[in-house]
Image (cartoon, rainbow, N blue to C red):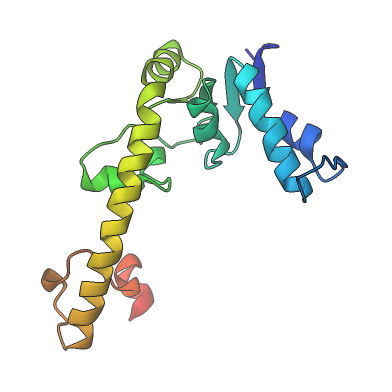
Length: 172
């Protein structure tokens, strides 16, 4: 289904891999050059296909106007994938499961959703930035409570012990 108006992560690595030797004036490193060139490609692509489901290029492509398509992980639903991304904690706290502007697979429903919600992606990322700043304050309060003797999880706003993330049999 990949067409000539589609730009993929495989094309990125082939076109802008380590072999790129561009040195325009005002740009000091190859990574910056590659980033600028890929951005230009995304501005002209109708679709962007990401074989890496966690690349930020999926997000950038959607904000630049390309329909961003993430190739689904085997056995992972769209909601599970969304919760495993860097915005998962935010989505969980807000009781949401969808990421606007990004299709999870090539079906028409996903492509339509991605195209219709592209405009909502940047505002979501701005919300997440503000939310992220508040999580630092919660973390600081949780650290203070723990340091002053509070050990009950019900007293914490967002903290978890690492041991709580593992099977109890592994930690005993």
